[in-house]
Length: 129
Image 1 (cartoon, helix red, strand yellow):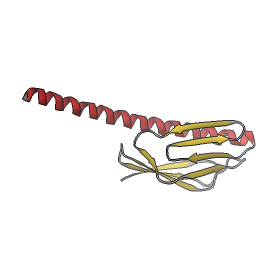
Image 2 (image 1 turned 60 degrees about the vertical axis):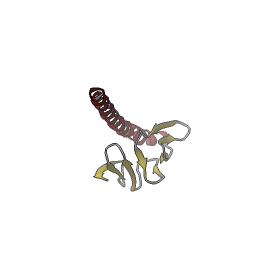
Image 3 (image 1 turned 90 degrees about the vertical axis):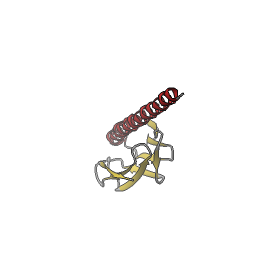
Image 4 (image 1 turned 135 degrees about the vertical axis):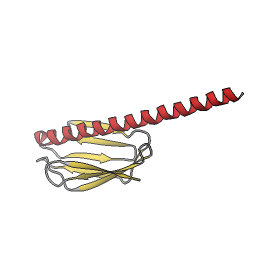
């Protein structure tokens, strides 16, 4: 019985470690897709001569160029938005300065996205929760 208990405990611990690593990888993939989608939007909004938007909801972020494109990214498990936000991109590709905050249960980090006033730049600052 003792051996079976030890094996079961080891197996449960291993499964949890694999799940945590899987969640970390999914979070990393989300941030890469976010960057690609943002850069695509900032690049294509001036070409379309329309105002683009990036809308942060509780479960997803939507990148939109009216009458043209709409891309939705769902947040991975454990990533939580602090507050609903809309970031607008002007027809010239410029954005107004703003901040969006996420917290992660997986990495125990707070992600602070600062959208820079000007040509669609942003920075992500990571802080421990």
